[in-house]
Figure (spheres, rainbow, N blue to C red):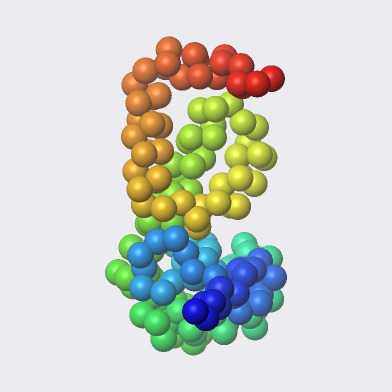
Length: 165
């Protein structure tokens, strides 16, 4: 039996055209697409708009690379892009951005509850947010909520010594 080719590794921060699919059921969306949509939505919510130069600065990419991806996301129905007029996120794009933001927020809250430093939280969240399955996200969301409602239980977890050490 032939072995299926694995998807290419994603590298949204260096501008390479990645093809690694997210763990989520968005029709063929890549990790890079999610990073772009999350960044664009955050810029729009913060500044009221998102320009190619703003996106490039936020992601540490070149303007030509971002321009290509913005056009691609537009062709896929995630953005509406009008040259010299800016861009808007479509309902389809907002769903993806909302989902990735929920994953990001849940993971940040979870790691924060465990007492990790902010820098380590950000590093871990960026490393795994595309790989958390919906089932795991649901469990983590429930756990974060449980610990918010039961701080004594959270304190007990934080004070527990790791097994075998």
